Amino acid sequence: MNLVQNILKPNKSVTAHPDVAATKALWNGVLWRSVTLPVSDTAQIRLRDVTKRFSLQDFPSDIGWYASNPAGGTLYVRLRASDAGAVIAETALELNPEARPVPLPWPADPAEIGPAACFEFHAAAEDITTLQIHRVLDRNELLSLAQGVGFEIGPGLRPQVFVNDRVTKISYLEEMPAEMWQKLYDETGQRGSKKADWSNYIIGKALDLPCEDSSLDFIFSSHVVEHLANPFGHFLRWREKMRPGGVILGVVPDLMCTNDYTAHPSTIEELEAERAADIWAPTMAHFERFVTLRPGQSAQKLFDEKFSIHVHFYTAHSMAGLLDHMVRAHGFSRFRIFSSRNHKDFYFALWT
Image (cartoon, rainbow, N blue to C red; front, side, top):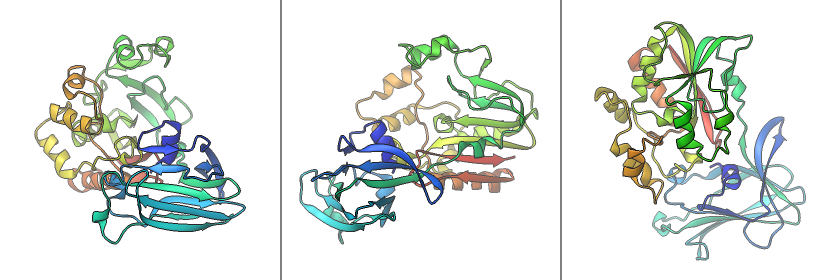
């Protein structure tokens, strides 16, 4: 899970000592996102919602983090019945300068893990302990596949694809004009929407790109696919807009590393049912499911406002299964997943 994101954007399911800090560091020549744990007599990190997290439902032996401390010490990982409750299970990892996997302790009987259970991480050491959280993905590796003529869907205020020695033409697609976008997502103007240059944007829908069939070499989107009803249908329509050998490129949040951490990945059967039913917009059922992950929000209010919700949920592994289905059942040629455990998002490429 992406502890870095929880520290940068506090989440009530994770609490940390005020001096826990997020950073980046090279580890074995590779850039990693990390957090540093200060010297403390008490636990530096507490992770709640143990029974709800999709990433923990198969009781993994480790969390994908790696711990090190130049001066040695011990990292205690305890599963408690509650924040101040009894210890259900515990492991102790001896710290040294070489980073080692952080183990997760589990009881012999899972029934001991109640709804208030939490993990606490306490580095008992005389120096700062570093937790390597995830290898940093290089988005340029994905963007290098954008070549020729293309569309970037839903760039908001920050397009990522520009004309260069590979990209000969790029069009930016937003579903609503600047005034409506500002009203929904930047009413205060703090995000800079009023100063943005909207002159290069085209207003339209992702399901019906305003361009000729067989005219594109690529379609790129970042944090868009999860907002789409009927993603299979969208992929098939996008293919119609592409020349042979075209590629769909996407950046997608990993549900396990976002506020969707209690969701389950969307399935082939679910997405094929939407395609068969010709559903192209989020339904009330989508909104009702979404608010179960965001307690306190009104599905009806969000539906009436046409608010952009996460309609479907993905992990890198589940997306691989979905794209494999597109190859096997719908005639796409191949796909590739770019992922790193605990990264807040993953990338994919799907070739026509």
